[in-house]
Length: 400
Image (cartoon, rainbow, N blue to C red; front, side):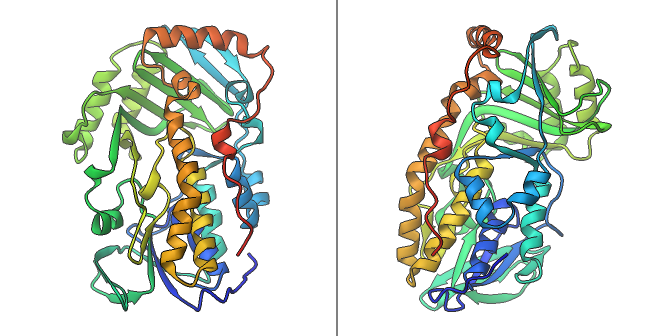
């Protein structure tokens, strides 16, 4: 990655909290501009594996400018078929992805670990990484942001970037408790790996009844596939957040059917050592910055996985924030420019939860299912439209 030390960096020090997509992306960009970057991550390494994620629209340009596009194109999953099933497991339609999601043939879809791995390798020898640690306290003063780490170390930074996800600890320290910003969308989900007895290859299978969807996702032709079970739940399941047993029980109760692969999926979930359970929600905030601290990615504006835009928003937000910090010597001006540039784009993309695409994948009512099925049966003969406006509604500014 080409370094371009910028006069406005003045070798300013930045602490980035979180080493996932948003944190690694902004570390890449800030280092390029000459900032002294430290990344703190509570895990013992950058997390690999994970579900495939989409990189779309302006995010593709951000990746190109990070000089990572060729590598990620080689890792492209190349999903070749999406099969929609009825309540009994019968096929409604089997379609190419571009027939279901307009613009899909222009996207890059890669396992999350491939993206984080590429970002990490780009800066691991030039950025300081502190693993197995996190921010304990943060005192934002005129002389800098004084940070105490859970490991006991105390350091002062010019700026702090919270890139620690939807349940951001940094956000809680600076802007208040999660309940103020967390907007529950009425669904829970569980993700885990499942044996592949159907020998699926480069494809997705979706089973839906009102309010519940089960999916199997094969990124290749291996012995394991990704399983996803999502279901409507009117209230936040507070009792499940800290209890894996309760999580499994909730999911099993939501999927009692014996149709299709559901019993096998529920059994695999109980046995999984990689179970990930959470609620479907968004983070909505009136401000993403305060003092010397800025939030980026899911910590600031998680759109929910229903939109398929979380990764793209993280990449674009990281690019824009780093660019503004390099442009303005005063971080207050930089933060204002970041919010001005990103706010309309975030609003459009968070609105995708009400888009027809989200409804098609996760229908809530019998009427929605019937409407979807009618549409699916005709999709193969319909011309492809242009990609939805929200994906491309922001033009990346030139480098600072």
